Length: 83
Image (tube, rainbow, N blue to C red; front, side, top):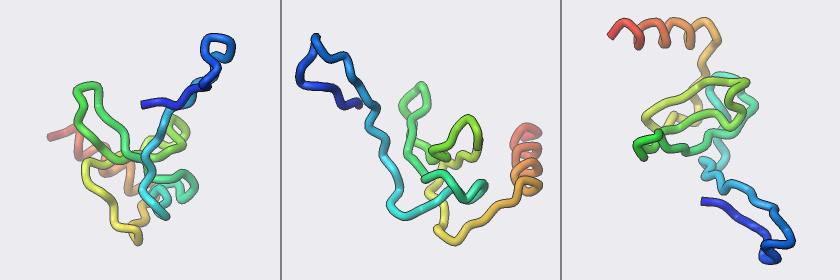
């Protein structure tokens, strides 16, 4: 989904509509908002709005109190690649 200028074709402005989780910051970087994105197959997932600077992502909605250190995130990524 996107938003665009109503004066098209004179104005070519477009902007993606990003669904954010209200009041929730990224558990990894604590800076970006948690956003809902879709995989290329259409399955929704949660991720950091600062991607690619922060690569946190989750299939489930995170708890607002969740905090993850960079070291914990690396361990979680390593475990996922082994499975």
